[in-house]
Length: 386
Image: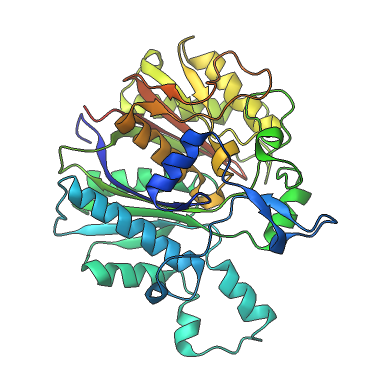
C-alpha cells in the first residue's frame, strides 16, 4: 500500500431511503429511520412489519428483479461520481460484488410458483455471475470479477480484497458493490425467531445501539458501490488497512472472552500503521443486540482513548445484512466530505461516548468494525482524503 491508502473515489447507493446517495444522506440527516410498516411482509395479527425495504425502481434493462436493478444502479452512480471527480479507468478494472443471499425473489418464484419452469434467459438471471457479467460488458472492464461473502462483514471483506488486488498489482482500479435485497417473509420471520430482529416497534424505540432498552435490529436492504483507486487526487476518504478473523466459537454467538475480536482490532491498527490514540470515531457494527453491543463497547473502553466517539447508523438504515458494512463505510466517507457524522438521535441513557444526532466531524481517523454472524470479525480504518 502507498502511505496515503486506497482512495474511495466514487459512491453510489440504493437504500430504504430511495435510489441514490443523496436520498441516503438526506434521510440520515433527517434523523428519521428508513423503515416503514410493510404490509406484504406481515405474518402477525397487525398485518405488517417494520423494515427498511428498497422501494421499486431502477431500469428494466438491468433485469427482472430489484436485486439486479439496484446493483447496476449503485455501480453506475459510483462510476459516474468518480468520473466527475477526476477518475479515469485504468487498463485493468476489477469488479467485486459482496453477496450473502442473492436474487431471493427470483429463486423464491422459481421454486414456489414456477415449478422450475423457466426459459434459459430467465434461468441465467438467477446466477450470481449474470449481473456482474452484464456490468463488465457495459463498461468494457477486463480485470478479475468475483463475489465475496462473509455474512454482515462482507462489505469490509470486499474492501480488504480490493486492497490486496491493488497491492499485488492485479488491477489498476476496483469497482466494489455490496447488495442485499433479501427481505422475503421467510427470511424476516427466521431472523425474528433467532431473537435478533425486531419488527413490531418503531426503529428508534426497538434498535438502540449502546443504549438502555435495545431489543435488536430492524432489518434493511441496500446496494452500495465504491470506485476504489490510487490514481486520483480527489477521493472522499482513504482506506488505510484492516484485518479479518474468525471466532471459531459458535454459529451465531460471539466468544464471550472477546479474544479474537480484540485481536482483530489490534491487527487492523497494526496493518494500517495507526496508533489507537489517533482513532477519533468507532463506526460500530452496533446492531442493538446485547452481545454485539457489549463486545464493541468493551473493545472501545479497553483499546481507545476517552475522546474516541462511537456511533451506529443501523437504527436509521436498518441492518442491511450483506450490504451492512458497505453502507456504513459510505456514511463515514460522505461524512468526511460533508463535515458531519450523521449519527442517530439518542432515545435512552447510553454509553458516555455515544454521539447524539448529527455531529460536526473532525479530521481524525475512523475505525469501522463489522461482526458477521458465525464469528466473522472485520475491521478497517478510514482517513480523511488529505
